[in-house]
Amino acid sequence: MARTRVPGEKEYLGRGVAFCPHCDGPFYQGKKVAVIGGGNSGVEAAIDLAGIVKEVVLFEFMDQLKADQVLVNKLKSFANTSIITSAKTKQVHGNGQKVTSLEYEDRKTGQTHKLELDGIFVQIGLLPNSGFLKGQIELTKFGEIVIDNKGRTSIPGIYAAGDVTTTPYKQIIIAMGEGAKAALAAFEDRMYL
Image (cartoon, rainbow, N blue to C red; front, side, top):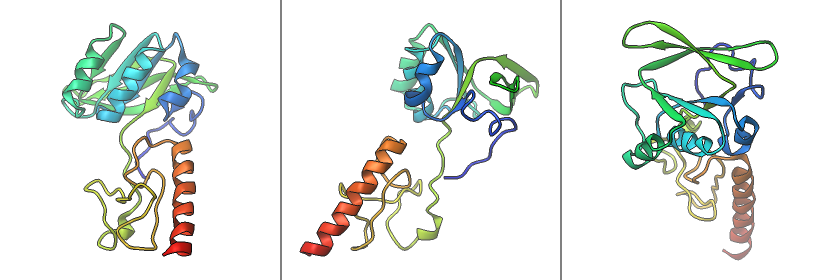
């Protein structure tokens, strides 16, 4: 998976910058956090975090959210959430120990703003690192490797697992289980086919 990092993100990874609201959300109970990304994954993360944290601010680069309307409506139903669109994330600031704020540019006005907060959840929809397979095995329009329920691809004898595939819920523990399942399917196919 590949994407561009903003200044300060790498320095505060695990100290206020996170990628998994389910894994790290409970550490921010009663605190103010930002979610970067207005697609389905970002809005779902903000909805999940709204039940844990004091306040969630969702940032979207485009002029409007890209998430399904039903998710947007659900997010807007929470009193502790807000949405900032046309926002270009500029820098993650901290005190050397943890995140303290997020700097962003209003793309419509060009003005720079700084939002004081305790955590940032990056949910911008990473691109699968599958370009080398284009034209060789079946990929979705997003570049995910299409697999069946046992990790088989469109070419017999080639298996795939993890975030690069069509498996929902891009989480480390799920990728590990999917890898084990694909390995067992490969063994089974070799033994019985």
